[in-house]
Image 1 (cartoon, rainbow, N blue to C red):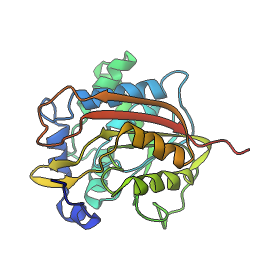
Image 2 (image 1 turned 60 degrees about the vertical axis):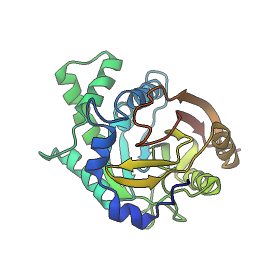
Image 3 (image 1 turned 120 degrees about the vertical axis):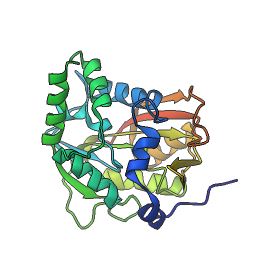
Image 4 (image 1 turned 45 degrees about the vertical axis):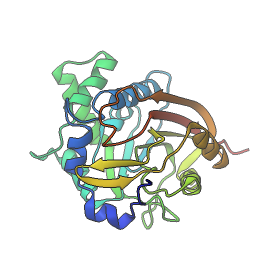
Length: 266
């Protein structure tokens, strides 16, 4: 049975960022702790590592209450603009930036990235968090379905746009997904990079006891959408889900990483 589409108002009323963290990211028990986070963090370590993508401005679209996907990027961008549709998620991001006492704990993923970089002692992990906090200059509201996702805020053209586990939530169908990618073109400099990581063939996910719909995409759908939106695909990786526990919480069968570029002006 298809999960009914979760509207923007459903998210406003029912999405709890603390439940989201506990369900998916809490150390040792979140269902994304391990397979998903390792897949994402290794990909981003390679993407933003030596000889990889660098620049001045990075836009993070639809962060939820999370910062894990920005840890590698903070070393190679001067300005990071993060964003989410929900006020309750933006509040959690602001709390992390302020180092509030009840902040969500991301030290386990910071340490994982520091391990990848060969700098895993405590001082280096603290320096990494400090660097990220310094580089994040804004936490904005974004709306994937709006004509201009950041209106009324004027946005600079970015060198890179990143998004994790976002677009399958607001987009009702492949046309919505493709149109959102087209809108992202306006946020990027010519030749700018777009990096999206998310799930394939997922129809629903739970946050605590609340059920939300998910746009089910295939690898072929992804390639079609990015090409139709006018991007040049640099790399597309798919990792089948090996951990079958938690299928009642979220039913994706695989994870994807896609790195594409906005064409240079001719």
